[in-house]
Image 1 (tube, rainbow, N blue to C red):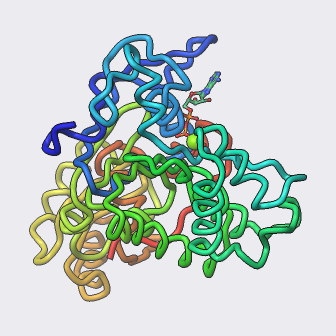
Image 2 (cartoon, helix red, strand yellow):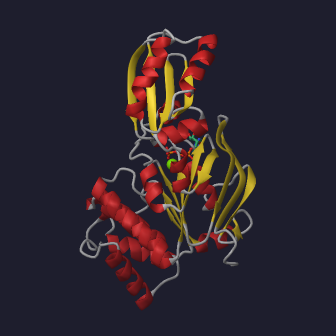
Image 3 (cartoon, helix red, strand yellow):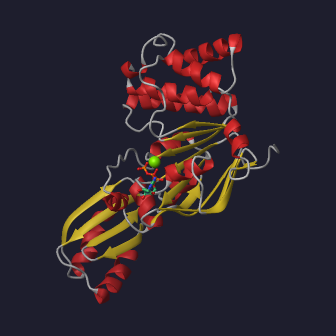
Length: 337
Ligand SMILES: Nc1ncnc2c1ncn2[C@@H]1O[C@H](COP(=O)(O)OP(=O)(O)OP(=O)(O)O)[C@@H](O)[C@H]1O
Ligand SMILES: [Mg+2]
C-alpha cells in the first residue's frame, strides 16, 4: 500500500434501511495512515452504520469506500484481513475464559502452536488481563471486558482498527485506562484507528482529526484545536419573559451585537444565545440593553462552550433535540475547553 494514500476513504455513502430510514446521507471520511480519527455524533447519527460498511458487514446503497487501499465492495476479503473490529456490543463469548476467547480468535486467523501462545500471552499481558486469563468473561468488569474486546481485534496485527464506542458505559477510571491504551496503539504501534464516540473529550484526547456527524453526514470536520478555537469564549443563554417578534428581533439583535465582546447573537422566540469573551462580565451589559429595549429577562446562564454548542452551530439544533428524535439515552461528557 502506498503510505501516502488514505488508510480509510469513504465517498458519498448512502444507506437506507427498510421503513425509509436514511442511516447515511452522503457520508465522506478520509483518514490518514497512522492517525486516530474520531467520528462524533448523537444516537442514530450513522456512526455504527459507517463502521459496518467500512468493515464489510453491510453494503451501501451507493457510494464508494476503501480501507487499507482495498475497495470494500470489490475486495471485502482483503479488507477483512487488514482490519480489526471492536463492535459497539462485545463480541467475546461470556462463558469462555479470556484466554480461550483470544485463542479461538487467533485460530480463526490461522495462528497456531507457539506463535499463537506467544501472541495470546503478549496480549493478555499488554491489556492487564494475565491474572484474569483463566476466568470466565461473564465475571469480568466492564473495563476488563472492553480491554478484551480490543485485544480480540488486534490478534492478527491489523493495519486499521475500528473501535465503535470503546468507552461508553465505563467508569471514569476504566475510561482513562482505555484512552491510554488507545493512545499507545496509535503512537507506538503505528496503527490507524477510527473510533466512534459520544464524548467530545474522548475524541479531543485521542483523535488527530474529528468529524461530527448528524443525520448520516459529516457536518464539520477538523482538528480538535480548530473546532475548539471556533468556540472561544463563553456561551450565554437567556430566557425572556415574552416572545420577541420578527421586527423586535432585528432591532434587538442589532443592539446586542454592538456590545463589546459579544458575538453570534441568536434570537429564537423567547430564547437568546450568544458568545462572549467573558460571559459573566458581559451579562450586565446584555441585560441592560435588553431592558432599554423593553424586554425583560426571566433567566440567564453562562457556560463554557460544550459539544452542544459546536453541534448547535453546525447542525442547527441542539444535541439534546437530536437525541430526542431517536428517543434513546445520550451521555454527554466533557466539553470544549
Ligand atoms: N438494521 C437496521 N434496520 C433498520 N434501521 C437501522 C438499522 N441499523 C441502524 N438503523 C437506523 O439507522 C440510523 C443510524 O443508526 P446507527 O446505528 O448507524 O447510529 P449510531 O450513530 O451508531 O447511533 P448510536 O450512538 O446510538 O450507536 C438510525 O436511525 C437507526 O435507527
Ligand atoms: Mg452506534
